[in-house]
Image (cartoon, rainbow, N blue to C red; front, side):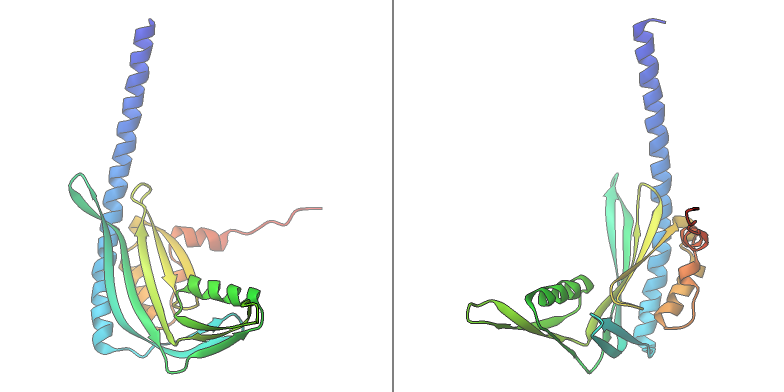
Length: 230
């Protein structure tokens, strides 16, 4: 076999690999789009129903282990989506349910050092909590302590985000059952009515099986860490 023939065969193998990879990506793209479409339709109807019925769901959030926002009522549900255009077609990339948990009693927290003030400020920013901080400074204009007012108005969300290359779906719950983020991972085919029903139960504060659904969660639940032998 001559050099030119060898190069031609390499080029053909590369072409076949590229075509195979593109076919897989196209399949994943279609799967993610279909799964997120299912999620969008369900969440859109869920938001409309919740806004009409106004179910009484209350949440509590611990803040910095020194206080708690208590008896916050969920309200104001809305759904948004994010799309990506490929080959002149729009594909769903993300579907997000947003709402608020609102109460009547703000939380007051005092921090007695510059480090603790900054630490709490960063934590509240990471949670997207609404707050004000009154700083007390010394004669050299350096912060000595801070008085935080954490407002009883917490933004919450549930985001279904698709990876258009791998066909995976990540569900991120923010400020729902706890302050901050909780992530779940699914195959696109797993995002269907049964899973969405369990998610709705979680939103209503009812017993649910959401944390156990999906192959990834099953694997994480059943995987045991082996202790090293002596």
